[in-house]
Amino acid sequence: MHIFVLLYNSGTDKEGIHSIELKGRTIVLMFEERDDATRYCGLLEAQDFPLPTVEMIEINEIKDFCKKLDYECRLVEKNFVPKTPEDRLLISPPQKNIEVNDWAGEADNNEKIDMNTIKENLEKLL
Image (cartoon, rainbow, N blue to C red; front, side, top):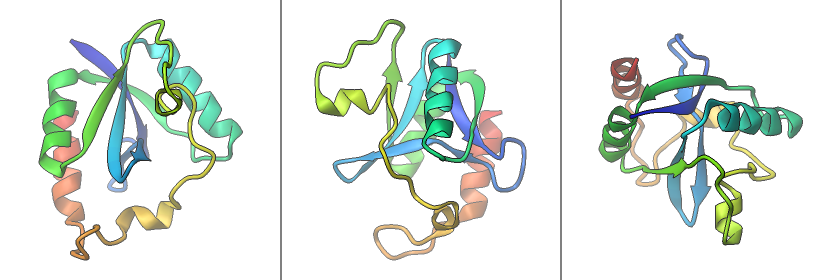
């Protein structure tokens, strides 16, 4: 099954995937429909977030990527209706974001993030 994700700086050595923080966990959003992903991009742009691009990818590749990095992934299905305040974050971005400079910051366990490994994992997804 193919899904859609939001990538920043797609195809560059500074490529990153859009995620949200929820209860101390990093959540990668996967969209079943391109239109929903595109709408989410528009909401990000309206809040002055950096504008990602919508990329189609195999769902198992994202699941493997998330598993390796101890991230979670959540599928936003077609006609998704939020049932909780947390669910609303799947269709409407939070009001604040991590600065782009923080993407290369330190991990929660105070170890440096191996950017080359992350880059290689993202390149495998494409």
